[in-house]
Image: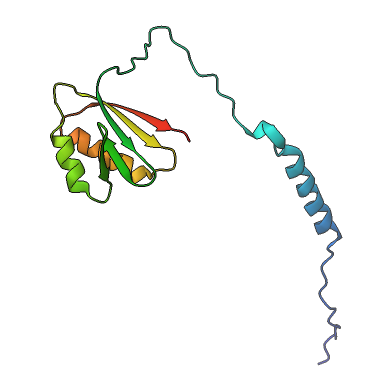
Length: 134
């Protein structure tokens, strides 16, 4: 029995429509993307007249310098010697519960958190934090 012999044609894919679709997708993403300053979200923060900013006039001063020096009421301590800092915080007057914690802008965040944790463990809850710019 003789079968019809069909010649195998090589499989080829037309890529012209594929290129058209890719260009259409590129145009779509370029048109829908945001360019320039429009990517930033502008916030209008609410304002209130009932809020009063109370700056602590009297209180303990703690300053953290970027060199690792901690000044507690003008007494100097090294941040690596944490036991001396802890003892000095224990010796602070608890009647004056207000603390102003200042840190230079390039001091480590972990130092500030460590001092704040020690202060809160020793009963100081009113802690004001500020950054010292150089």
